[in-house]
Length: 227
Ligand code: FE
Image (tube, rainbow, N blue to C red):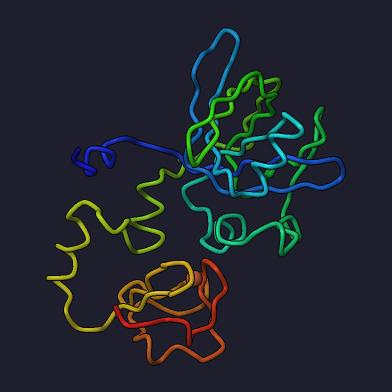
């Protein structure tokens, strides 16, 4: 089996939210897809270890927000690299609620859907929830973020067994070292800097202020190691 075959598949980037009574949570997922149109059905695969999984499994309701290409890393980091067991992910985030009461994240969203689980299948590490969409709205026009764009452009890295694109870039630019966050795997590329964290492109890692934190997970500068 050639793992590179899977990189030819395309995915979006989504925030999937659910609830358990008064408790709510949301997480980043790339595995959301439409599976039928009449009725409108979507399939959502969620890791069993995640708190959102526990909530969907109990309440059988969820929402999906489709993220825009210009979604900041810090937003993705909040929903993707932190656990709702430790922090309130909705602090400072724009969201609304409708019929099910599950938060619908509208920040950085192009569109959203609210859905009820009508079936679920065990997928070893994950559960695939098949859901009937009960409402869907467009928030704004724009390019949706793809999973590939997130890895290659936003994070400055592709998954470990990734296509050749990053290797080609390295050969052309040997000067300043890249540094990797040991917590979340984010790569600081001096050529790109961290504009969201006010670090201009061309700033060597060594010149970044000590109070700078990982734009994805919030880890300290001292948690980075040279790539
Ligand atoms: Fe990090």
